[in-house]
Amino acid sequence: MPVPFETFLPYAIVFTMFGVTGAGVGFVKYKANGNKRARRSLDQWDRQMMNRDLRMTGHLRGQSDLPVAPPGYELSHPWRACREAHGLNSLHCHRRLSRKLKAESRRKAR
Image (cartoon, rainbow, N blue to C red; front, top):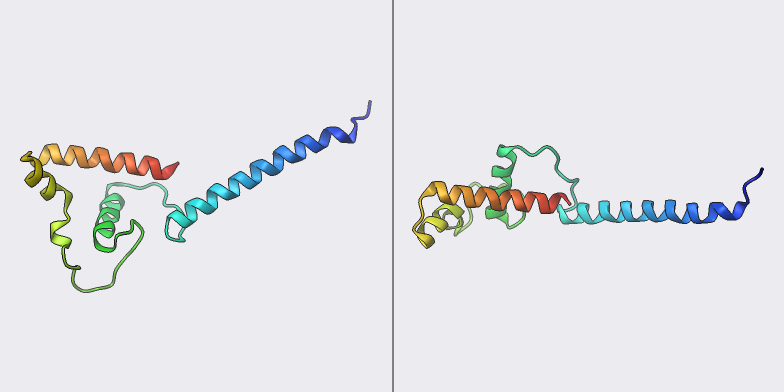
């Protein structure tokens, strides 16, 4: 028994919408990463370098070729700021920072 061609129209619409939304999400991730592909398999070193790049340039994916750090770089370290602001030991600050970085990476992975 043949299938009427009218049944293919909804499938074509659904298939097209999945393609459009997938391409849209990819485009938004690309633009959010400074016009670079999204990073995959981040380890502790990559996160540390991303944190350093964020403090130096203001962008997670930004890099600088300046031989000296910009003014205020030495004051932007989160552990020192946490310790001075809250009077907490460095282990507590490290735990808070690692939770914050994990939450940011999960949010950016979405």
